[in-house]
Image 1 (cartoon, one colour):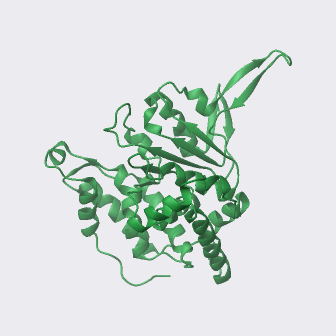
Image 2: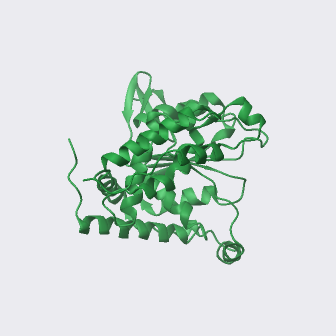
Image 3: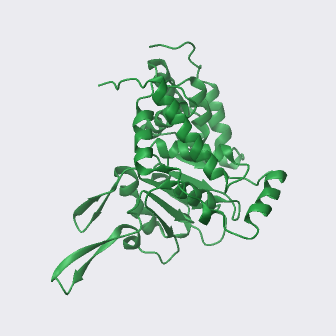
Amino acid sequence: MARQRVGPRTIHSFAERFDAIVENVGEVIQGKDGAIRLGLVCLVAEGHLLIEDVPGVGKTSLAKALAASIDCTWRRIQFTPDLLPSDVTGVTVWNRGSGTFEFRPGGIFANIVLGDEINRASPKTQSALLEAMEERQVTVDSTTYHLERPFMVIATQNPIEHEGTYPLPESQLDRFLMRLRMGYPARKSEIEILDTHGTTSVVDDLGPVASAADVEAMIEVAQAVHVAPSLKAYIVDLADATRRHPDLGLGVSPRAALGLQRAARSQAASVSRDYVVPDDIKALAGPVLEHRLALTPEAQMRGVARGEALDEAVATVPVPTGRST
């Protein structure tokens, strides 16, 4: 059943609240408005975010600032080689006083969960996140516990060539709606960082500008943004193009196509539009699709980058023109 289209006033309120959160996070992360907006698009699209870059460029600060800008529960899990799956999901323990077993929730039970340096934990611990990220529930000792909405995992990782890291498997990467790279700040922004972060922690002073209920309402609005049939076909054709590209041994999954549509809806709503345009999809193709691709061995030997292969695949798909109703 099709959702009812949102009105102009509702979509305008969405964009105002979206901009307020972006501006609040920008008090901490200078010169990275694009990354901030993508992170918030990911949250409103009910996706999970992977931030990958070298140490010290603001990965953790971005995640903490986004969580602090929303009045909701959040927890931080520091991933280390000795972290156990039960530290993430929780564990059932015997209560001697009551004579019963009790479930003690792990760090995953929060609206926003920061998984810091996720690729420093063992694959067994990484896999503890799979059910929670995909189905928004956790099963411990045959009992299923549902996670509250909104729910988002923001994971950071250092490049895999750094010592003591475990590459995330394809099944884990496919659970992340987006992957971002922060990059080094521009000279002017880095001077501002020295001014604002030189003596105090700006994140600790950051107050919320939206509630969990506000974010939940934004999610509902974004899901009602119109996607024309021609654009749905465009998304499917993009996915198919990655599966047929000669340099790609693994194209994107139907889950990725669904994620791209959700992200495009959130992107459109963030700029006061109640409908998706092709530019929304093209702008999000890199953050949403690139990390899900796998190069063939021959392409790796030639030094082909996944981003280059994705750009070539996208270029082969005709962009729909006009807007159908």
